[in-house]
Length: 117
Image (cartoon, rainbow, N blue to C red; front, side, top):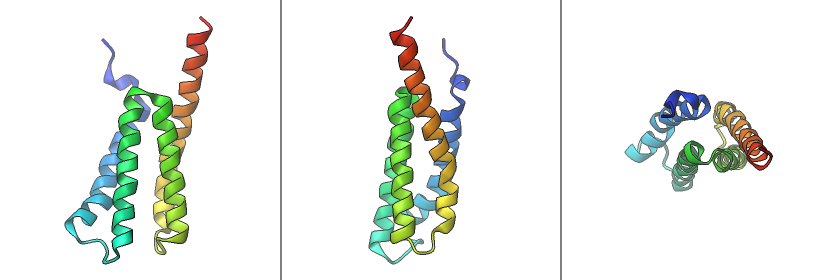
C-alpha cells in the first residue's frame, strides 16, 4: 500500500490550495473582494485552473505540473495587465511555479525509466 506521505510536492500544493481558497477565492464568493466583475471572475477562474492542476498532480504528475505552469502564466499576465494592485500575488505564486516545474521534470524522468527498464 502506497503511503500518502510519499508525495510531498502534492501535499505542499494542497496546503497552498487551501490557503489560496481561504485568502482569495472565498472572499470573492462572499462578495467582499471587489466591485469589478472581471476581477472577481478572473480570480475564480484562476482558482479553478489551480484546483484542476492540483487534482491532476495526484494522478498524473506531469499533466498537473503543466497545469500549474499554465496557472502561473495566467497569474503573471493578469497581475501585470489587469490586477493593478496584485504585485504580492505574483510573488506568492512562485512556489507553485517551482512545484509545477519539479512535477514536470519528475514526470519526464518517470517516463524515461518506464521506457528503459
